[in-house]
Length: 480
Image (cartoon, rainbow, N blue to C red):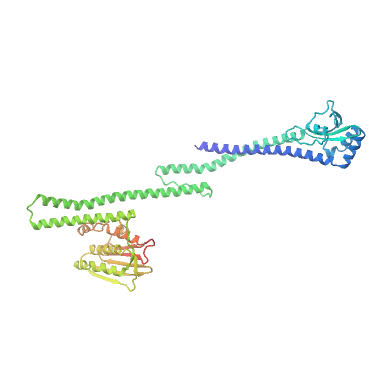
């Protein structure tokens, strides 16, 4: 393939050189021919427009002396360009065209040309024929008893010699041009193909899954742009493949987590149901206990399915929000009052502080309260009995915030970034006992982001956690 590219480039440049030389040769030869034709007829017209020459020729013609006419023309051979080698003058009989005198003796006379025929008819014969191998003019001249024709003819030998010289120069220039063009074409081909070869090598590596090889080319031309575009494409492709691998890993973990989370309650339900079905003599109190376990596990499965459905709708972009103005402070107080009894049941010190001037915000009231409820519920769930939980709400800039701070079990430093991952739980055993699914903070994070806000979390293992939700007062920019 590389040899083919070299060959193509070299042949293209050679063809261009040959074509240019050929065109130049054609135009030069035609230009020389045109120049000589125009110069001949212009010089003839200028010479014979000389009044002295015209008077002298008419005088000689009146005396019927063709030799004298020839002498007069000889005296003007400079203006006429007579050189006896390529251009000559002749005096012809005006009735028959026979040769009478001239700069050279012609025993067989002159060939009768179209211009001589015209002059025999009494008119000036000065027509130009580019295809003829001669140039001529024939001018009729009336004498005493006879008529004459002054005839100038040029055999174009000078023009042919010049064209031959030009052709020789063109051939020599073409030879030199071909040598130079071969050298330049090879240099150009190497300059163009070397980066293409590097790109090809890098593309082969990329096709094999190796993204480590980057093509270095800082030029500003199209190949440089192509190289940088290829490098960018390789980086994006590598990132895409990494994302796909991560997505695949997350998918596998997600499936494993869902399977595990559903298998546990299903196993419990199945075990208790089989016990009830196989032992009709179970005491009523134990039967009621078993039924309560089945109901609780069924509720937990339902909660898992509902949370998964909510997240899937978020992922598909089909989750609909109902944006409207509402009191953020009121929502915070409603959530506090809703869980206050549960917090007191665990003997927690449960406090609420709302700063002055918290404005109404634009958002989905039910979903915002869902976020707040999840934050407070987690604090109660992961704080040992007799702990401290403080809720604080206020306004900073154009955002309202609500912080829930506890002195619970905290989160390991390496796991802080995982709290919003699906199915993540700090204390898995305790979460299951309390009905947790590990999806609450993932849902809360999605809701906050859809509102144009964010959730921040700070935690130390054994010292507690502080989680804050920030929401813009004006709501998301694309809110309906």
